Length: 69
Image (cartoon, rainbow, N blue to C red; front, top):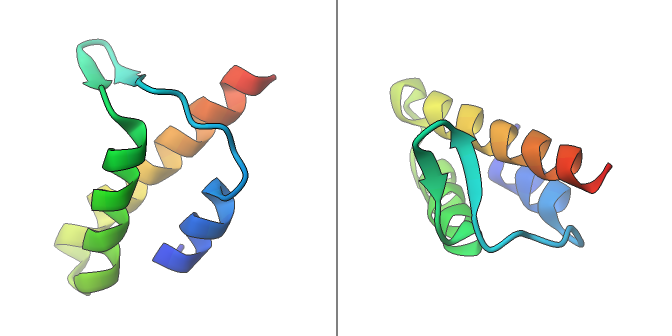
């Protein structure tokens, strides 16, 4: 997915203030995290940098969707 795809996916979703990705891996400011990760995705084209960003964004999206169910 591209940065634009993730922006569209997160658009209109109520973001929690914090979220736990894994035990001990807590994002304390989800909107700021998304802003930073999307900036990295927009500005870098190297898979070594973008692959972990895409993984984290997908994980956050899945966790937020799971919380709303």
